[in-house]
Length: 587
Image 1 (tube, rainbow, N blue to C red):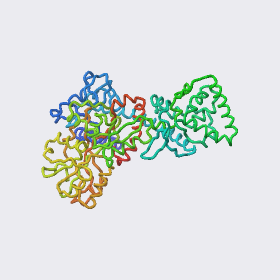
Image 2 (image 1 turned 180 degrees about the vertical axis):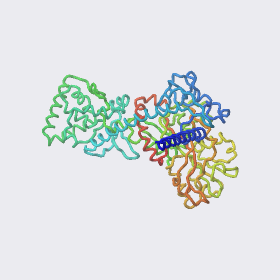
Image 3 (image 1 turned 90 degrees about the horizontal axis):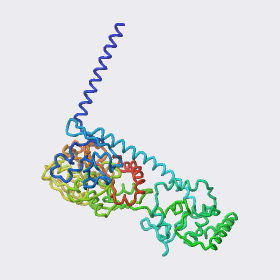
Image 4 (image 1 turned 60 degrees about the horizontal axis):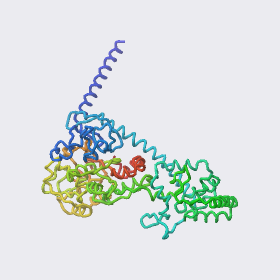
């Protein structure tokens, strides 16, 4: 019994020691650790940076939490009745994340950073709810879309030929479909079309109808018409609404083509001949009544888009001219990924110089949307104080890395090794790389002494390979063709991916007060030829920083396409896993 008591005492003491040790370690960790790139830290200061608030006075109102003076669209002064994008602390405004965070003030902690845990948790929770539901909805739509594609593939294929009387939708230089663009029913559908529920409504429309097997011996569409809509009309010709469908549109090119196809098939099908005869009898009766034909006619209670060919609907989606970057960089291909099979809109990537150029083109109306580094907006309002750029952030699919690469013989293996004898090529004017370098200088003026040039692309690659003290900065995800090329050059030329060891850049915050840049350790092997240590002989991990990439839309486009936007957000969010896989798993 005594021995058992001793054991209990020893066990209790050990447990108490362990709890105390863990608590002490946790206290030390929370008080002094550096935020990782995944953290959601906030600064208490309303300006974007404690060091640069005086030099960037135009941005001082971004962090305002007063309801009567909150700013819209990251900086342009708007009344509170207008929808905000990045407004910190608003309890009633819907911000650019598609969420409504609580008006919780940042809670200071020890160390340089201030953390608003409640606000961070609120934003994260709302993000998950908004995007999580959207992803599930997108998956259901994808299943319906796949079923539709399988059904469409069962029809007889053909290659239409464009004529003078028809329009054509083109993919590159190949005509994929032709139809009469002037058809009144097409114009009518474009106005009211809501693609977000198309597949659900289509399935419901045909749910009580057994599709005749012979219909699949025809084409999937005729002019503007979906083939199933016409075969359904024929099977329900005793319905007055469907009777008038044929009567009003019998002289349109697509309906005439379908009738010729049906007559051809009826030569070998007595059942079909009987249905066509019944339809002709009803048509003659309507003609004798003197009913005036109306080419915009849609049966009452039927959505017009259910009658039209899918190619026509795809061709008439609202278009988003998406400013991206160079074709060798990620933004261009990310825009293509987002637009792939998108039902709510059609995305047309626009080649640009990069993030800063994208914001300028967005404001001047040359683009409807853009993919930008989050730090680009700070430079935009600094360069254009009177900017009235008005946009909403749709999603932030991944974080980008400022890749600083120098010749190994330059002696630069860390950011702090740069000196006045070095030159950094920061990409073309308007590039995201130039933006990030400018923000680095704003946070630490010592880097302003280093010479920079607006050179990018092949010329920057050539100079990096041949000039000992010339470095290159490229802000991008992991999987760009440009960085793969740089890594390949590293097989024959000693190049070094430089570590970011200057903590001043972590002081920068975005218009919501969130930490703008985050530390991240890039695992060894991501760039096996330029991540080296020990006399450039061994692979090594590299300490770098990250900055979020944002997809934004002009609010004017959103207001004109409200139906499309309602579904676009969830569709775009559903592409995040594919985008992250493309950029090498970077989150």
